[in-house]
Length: 326
Length: 58
Image (cartoon, rainbow over all chains, first blue to last red; front, side, top):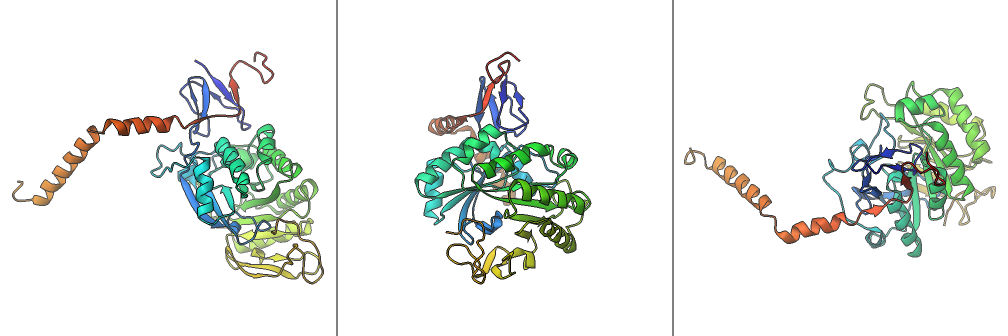
């Protein structure tokens, strides 16, 4: 038996010949580890950048978004479980789009960026890497939407070809990670720091699940850590939970919980804290942290007012707002 | 029975036809499927079990 050890993510799966890793899509065939979903996305959509969510990176632009089957996390509340918790064999739609086809398709659709998203793109790493190089050559940008459960060495290499990332920091508690996602916290924190060190534009999302990770003291510790390690200008998105997959026993997150979390994070020093999955909420919009001017008003994923100057500053006090605006 | 229920007869013939078409997959279509399998790419980060990261035995 020619077993191999996958060194892409912290699980370091030992995969027997003919078997697959925990992600179900990295397979050992004849002693070689193959990326079985390379060039085979199962989801392709054009989304607004706000849906990722990325609020400080080319706001309002369309982004060509793809995913393949498989994931290296197994969140009980997964929203895309039909896609992520599958090796692809149960999925009806699998497209053939190698990196050349993908970039051409995205351009034909008028998109200036490609998002690797929906499931965790860590498991189709090679597809992301090869496509991102071609996308850069074509003058496009790459966006990586991930849970950040990846080893540092492959992530550093990927950061050379990625322009922006939104990382899901699911809780600031290792116990939560182990029970709810099957992963661990520390590698995710390491990935966040790596994104920052490598100069990738970074935003962080935290899905608040009632009773499991909505403790305000934990939120304060998380916000302090983000401010200290990633910078106080790092956008943080608190997202509303909806009952899904194997976690249908809990109610949707109350709006007041999201409000309290947002206030707690801002009190801890973060300048741009958002509320997601509640359309029309005040926390969907961007405000100047100095004088409170409304800079970008959002309704759902749409932008209804845009007042930032062309170089990304507040029009009243000239405060620079971190982000990639042009 | 067939005279009494032509819908059932059509369904039966449709299923039979589908099965026949499935068995009779043209050889060039089988070749295409094999060609697709070749597109899998070798992963970037792995090692044979038994070798440490610096080539040492585990």
